[in-house]
Length: 330
Image 1: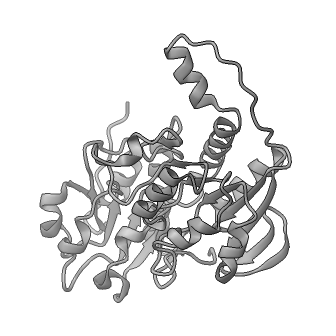
Image 2: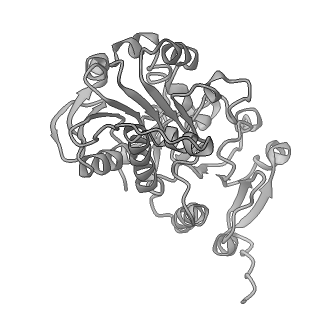
């Protein structure tokens, strides 16, 4: 293998916040820039004077406390689609540009959601349990053709979910900031201020919205009361979209039929959480978008943007820090 040529003296300085797993395939980035890999404890000392920060450990909450009062990086890129952990006042109010890894997770998450819908409709979790108990118990299951799915969130992930569920025979509608009558991926899109009305019509409610002050806790006791008693909730967005204590109460009372949760307010989900033990809940560890090669794709997206940063071209996936998600593309 050809050795990596070090960056030149005038190259930008990039800090990479790493966790237990370091990014692979950074050779090109190391040719373009002086790259320094740090953990949470070293972050505060590394940021002043740095040109860019790559938040590889996208679950870290250390950046807000480590952010310098002045002379901080002019560009921050995160190895995830969600950016809620970056939207603290010091970063939002400054001139730093924020980019994300939009586009990598769309189809994998859509596939995962379809799998969850099928698992509920075909009662697969009961089948697995009965097999473990060596019990032969015939049951009837539900069709998904014609079932109604409401996808909350009209970004690329929500659109991919809509396409996948629609192709499987579900009747799909959406909910987002802007109402539409004939969206190509989501059919009728309800405005968020009419979410309660849309919830009452759905057999599956799929959350794929970003976490913002407007969406935090939007699935609370009142929203859950609006849902059909036979409906299931699927959350692949952010844990903070759901008021978890209200959800636990609704599930225990049978106000909705079940929930599949891939994201949580606190991660890892504490062993003491009652969600682990509820029979009508599927818990997964924030993995809905993680397919083979996903980490390599994350590095590829960052390196492509670093190429643009070094050459002075517009960055891709620029986040509107006021809205909390990517706006128009350059």
